[in-house]
Image (cartoon, rainbow, N blue to C red; front, top):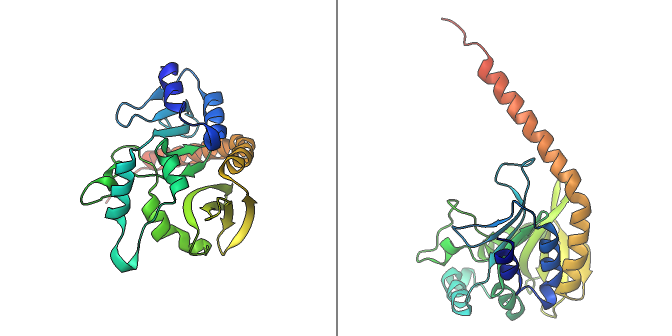
Length: 229
């Protein structure tokens, strides 16, 4: 199974090398390929949830599927989805990822159908079209910036990532508050994955404690006697 996972990760070279290196470092005995989606599910985290993984990498999409998605998800004059060539190249090797609370958005297979519909019946990457139509608004980016992902920033807040026309990557908080600017995708991944790796143990512990609290509350409610009429 580990060889199958490494094979799926092998296209993650050049600007995606930091993503491959981090994913490979997390491979453990519980890692597997999802039979429903072909995604690599790496490092099961039962403290968070029984089916939670620290890293999920989706296999790349054919170029023709990316073009078809662009066309179907463009809504006339009100919204036109244009995926930069640089990100199309990434999608052809990795159709989105979730790693250490970083999300790289992709093309959910259900949104590639006609008509496109969001589905929660199986694992899918977060939707690029929805991100660029709706989610970007709170961060107030420049119209030329492409919203391709986001990540954990604090217990109260997430960051949004934007690709600039010149290849720079910018991280914004809500209200157009810049957190960082990187000259290219590789340096962005390298810095952010290092930041998130340092934060992940505390995040995981907080989710474990929250889960314990929910379970204790549910048991209390279950044991509570009903009022007799």
